[in-house]
Image (cartoon, rainbow, N blue to C red; front, side, top):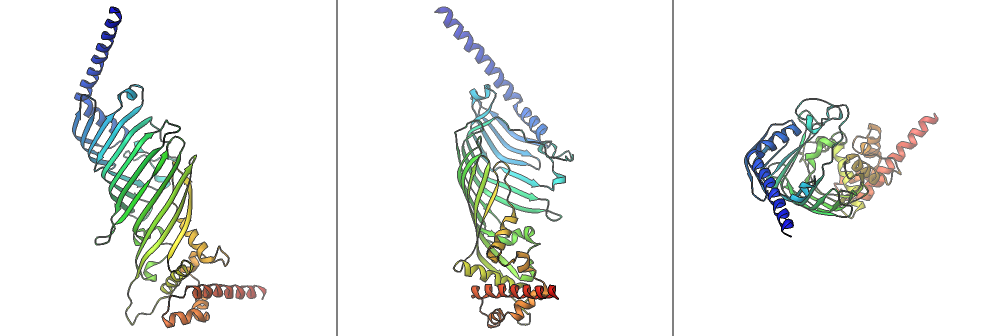
Length: 399
């Protein structure tokens, strides 16, 4: 018995000395070690103003900056010691105060991976991202911010900001078959100065191992004009005289075995046209835009709404505006019955325009009388104009 007690004491003494040595080494050299590892990973300059490691191995960092990628006022890490000794990156909690993330999208030929972001090296194919053995019981973010820059649009790129982000995630575990992580995120989307900010909220659960997911996403007060670079080749806002467009977006998201389906609902809640002076004539593009809005209103009891489905992968999600465009086409054409596409609505050939605005008496009377709440009549006029144009084309072919 005495030998057993002595062995236990020696074991714990050795363990204590090892832990003490590790703690002392990390307390003295931990800041430099973290900076060096982050710089090796990102190829970016890294700075940390404050570093503190408690005897329980709780780590506090302040004023962290990874140049061009990330910065935060403070990060608090509470590691799971037993899991760390088993070779897993595991934490009981991670708390971030005012973190800022910079996300960038480049054209395929300019794609670079994280470790080559600052070296200027271009790769033919993106390298596969390694999955780290990571576990976190609780992740919390306060007052976060994301700057997203799409360099594929325009010389300066397209930028959108999400700020005042509050986020929590429980039970993040990449190894568990059955454990689901629940999450919630809220944030704001600032548009132009003086405009009401957009609001974003999402909540649900996710199984990272099986790539299963159920979530609800709600974005309100979206500035539709802000996203004009994405649909500028479909619609000419200047000619249509659309000055303001506000939208709401909701989506029910589900994923099974990495196959993600998002049932989306988009509603135009407010639209403002640029005022015209009495001398200015109403351009055809404005007339067509008004006609299209009336068609939508006639189909949904005065509301301008659009439903569409996105199918993608949970581990590499993509939102394609082409899905929205297809939904608009289907709604305008009655499941393509008349072959009217979104390009046809906003960029109709001269002959068809003449048929709509000169030959279609129902629509002419509507515009002359100034009555625009006649969606069904407008829809019939559009269809009639295309039928008429189709008959003329058929007759020309015969001749």
